[in-house]
Image (cartoon, rainbow over all chains, first blue to last red; front, top):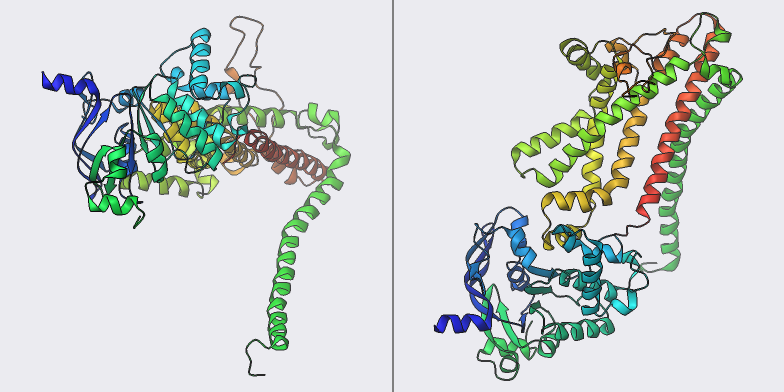
Length: 260
Length: 308
């Protein structure tokens, strides 16, 4: 009974996860949870494995040979281990969307960019596509800027708009978890602020896991924060605790800027 | 004077070094001129010799014993049909092979050996492809000395070009675009069909046209499989007035092509035929240049929407 109550609050649970690029052990025995409809931030110095960890959630590593997972990531409420070889990575990616570090719109129209995830699912009816595309663009706070030029090329948008377009593209398919891999590192401060605001607004709809190299960003947007170092999860707690009263000396050193 | 930063000394040294720039520039321009002037001279000679022979009749007449009434009708029709077969077979084969090697093939020793072989195939002398086609298409598969056999022979010849162009065009697409598609739950085939092929189409198309431009001038493999040098009739028309309105009889028809017609005229003793050969050469060069021009134009047009 305890378990069920627990898993209601969790969207996902990482159990003893290790990851290997060939023989290189990039993640070591990570245990963590994603709280449902909350924002969890992953912070840590470059090369600590935070992006590697994020990309486990949508099985991105399956695209390249020689990568290996150990341990589980349980997805709730259906209690399925998304790292299991029996689970098709494509199915996982349909349930868990991702926004990348640099905006990567397809060289297609704004409309087709947002609709692509739906088209992959075989949705053809114009009315459904129109509605979902509009909703996604509204949720990504882009609708008002692009509603009159949906057939324009996505490349004609500014960097910040392109990133919001990528967020709309990820949202269009109603994902259960949304992954962000340093989504503002290629953007200027104004675009960054608008993306952060957007991420904060999205947590009512979707569980969010965000990698960031920017500690202020983690402090501003997230509910929970995990600090990683050299492939290990050093500390995971509510963001306020991590930033005000970290349990580990190492976390404190990183957060106060003594190294990183 | 023992100061290393003495300006007079520095200027002298710079001046001496710059002389090498000047020297190489001169060498470079000469090298370039040798290449360009040779072509211009050849082309001008052909223009002078062949231009007077170019007329509507030249394109609509069959070859003849009388040089003044001989034309290239059977040759350009033959070339067009052979190119059609070449394109129709080399494009799907080459693009599929390129996509497979780039996106699907596991990265292992076997794949690497195949890759090296494909690249090397581009350097195999064309007459070897002619021999292969003679043995395989003409005799084994019994296609005869036909347009089909010739088109397939040239398709084999340009396959490596199409494969390499496809691979390079696909490889130029940033990984971020691929990952973007996969992250939305696309399968490999959806990624290839919806993204990789459309975004690489300008590069692939350029490769195809460059390959065809090479094939159009090939003589050796066509002679090897036994194209006729004198032919005064056309293959059966591909469109008929009876159901099903399409006919593929032309595939098995005997034929000739432009370079063979040229070769035939060049080897005649009468001087008048030399002018015919020049005129045919002119047509062939213009066809090739037009194809290359089209490739450049298409690349420019299709790349306009893509920025990476």
